[in-house]
Image (tube, rainbow, N blue to C red; front, side, top):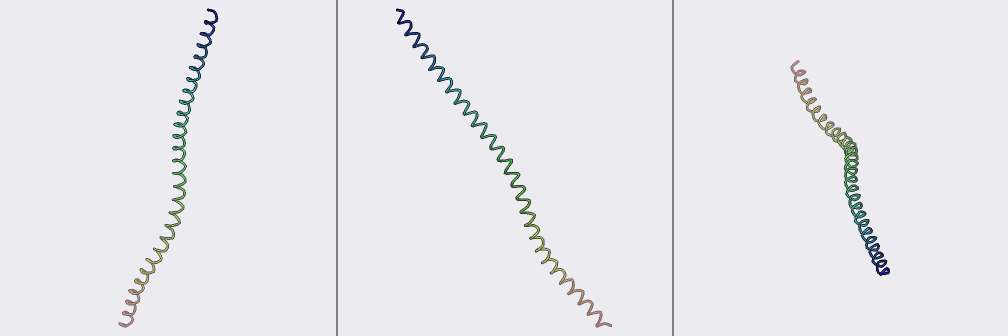
Length: 101
């Protein structure tokens, strides 16, 4: 009788230990899920901020260089055409005045 009680008590302790291990595994699984969600949110926010800063700096530098080159070429062509037309008109008027005199 006494021995059966001891064995029943031992079985109950073993079951309790198994249940405790299962609870710990479940807690670890929940913790790993929470950590993975937290890390994914944190990394997505961090990467979006980092990428936006990097892209804004890169684009500002790239666009400023590109726009400077583009504007210098455009303005040089535009001004050369405009000045040549202006000089053509001015010289034609000046020659006409000289012929009249």
